[in-house]
Length: 350
Image (cartoon, rainbow, N blue to C red):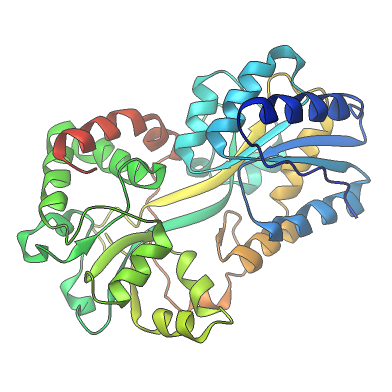
């Protein structure tokens, strides 16, 4: 079993006390046999990956879990004394924030370069994507026909007025999608798209991705934008009411066809920190995340698409269909997040 010290960051004095305690414990374990991981992935199923890594290598995983922005600020405040070796988070926007703060160091690994496609990693090899998340259109099967759907851009058409619901623009998932469209179409057209989207809202943005799915199943709207892995969670639930919700929802992959750019793909990924005290172990850990063994656990446990080719997709997720990915490098729309949020604010996406 991997040895994990799991900390959920609180606030105020409690954070300071926990941070100091954890810092002392981690610094006591800076050796080739330890990797200190700061992770914003809040999935207990990832434990199986850490345990498999320890079983294979003998390297123990010390784990600190918290929101990505809190972890980034913590690493910055710890400075050169940070015990952290690896930062893992979700969404390229957050990886970009860590990169922009100068927290990562480049990793020259033939294993990672071979396994992880170019569009899913930093061009400078500062971070690597280990899972893929498709942001798709989900719709109420009784109220929308798949033949009516086509592209992200089409969602701004007035035909969808009063029928679209989404989560807040403050969430990085929507910022990244808008950042991708900003890169493709330029600022003016991106803002026109957001204005069209806002004009079609059935209600003010609220809730997370799961809340959007439940709302369209209940008829509060007809369609929404969400990440794919949320629906299999409901479909596999032990609660009959959640299975019923999932049965009402259809999945549509936008921007397909010969001339389509492909469905927007975001990532969960990580990199080795510039101040990592256990650099060799940290690189070994990242290489393990790109292995078929770890990729299969990612795919089976959290319904995400593997980043590595040839790894089977979860059967429920696979049942929603195959699709063409957008090959835009994740660093680009991550870098565009701040500008995307400005556009969303101007256009009234709250």
